Amino acid sequence: MNIIVFQMNIIAGEPARNREKVKAWFHRNVNHGVDIVMLPEMWTTAYALERLKDLAEPADGPSVTFLKELATDYDVHIIGGSIAVKEDDNIYNRAIVIDRKGRIVYEYDKIHLVPMLDEPKYLSGGRHKVQAFELDGIKMGIIICYDLRFPEIIRDLALQGIQVLFIPAEWPEARAAHWETLSTARAIENQMYVVSCNRIGSYNGTTFAGRSMFIEPFGGVLSKGTADKEEVLQNTLDLESVKRVREEVPIFKSRVPDLYK
Image (cartoon, rainbow, N blue to C red; front, side, top):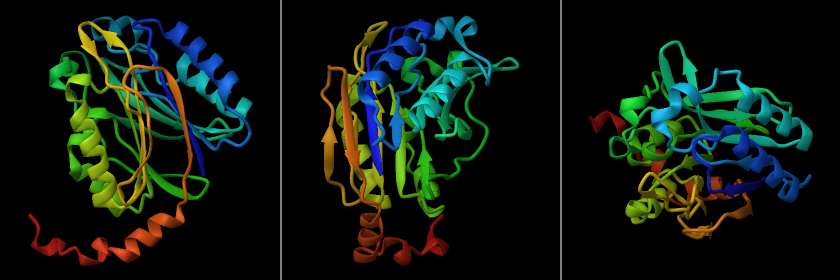
C-alpha cells in the first residue's frame, strides 16, 4: 500500500487559498501508483480559532466537496486531515476519510481538545468513540494530534484490528520530543504502522514541529520530515509485517484484561 503525506504550511484563515495549494500539490505529486494521500490537521484554516464562527463549514461544505473531487479525479483514497465543521451551535475539529470513489468512509471528531492552544474555548469535543474503518480491505484508524497523549483510545483501535494508524496534527515545536517519542511508542505497543502528517510554520506565536513520520510496527522510523520545510513523504507499507511482529511478540495473546482496571 503506497501512501503519500503532504507536510504543508497552512495559510491561516484562508480556506480557498489552502484548497488551491493542495490542488496544485496533487497535480505535481500524486500519480496512479499512489493508494492513499494524507493532509494535516485543520488544513483549511489553521488555528485561526477566534475566526472559526465565520470560517467553519457545514458537513457537506466546499472543502469536503473538494476532497471528493480530488479522490475521483486522481483515483486515490484521501485521509483528509481535519477541518472545522459547524453543526448547530457547535464547531468540531473533524477528520474525514474519503475513498477513491468519492464516498465518505469515516468521520471522526477530535475527542481531546488542547488546553495549551485554547481549543476548548472555540471547539466542542467529539461525542463518539473511535472506530476502525477499511480501505482496500485493510483495517485502519485515525486520531487527531493531542489524542496521541491518550493511549486508551489507540489501544481500543488496536483491539478492533487496525493495522495502520493515521495522525493528522498541528503539534508545536515546543513539544516536538514528545511527538516523536509518543508516536514511536504507540507503534511499538500496538504493533501497527503509524503514519503522521504534521504542519510546519508559525501562527499566533506558536511554531509547529513538522517531523511527519512513517513508523513501522517494530518501532523503526521509515521516514521523517524536517522541522521547517514543506515536503512530500512517501512509503509503501508491507502489511504482512504487522502479522509477523504480532506473532514474534504476541502481546495481544499475553494480555490479561480481567486483571486491568
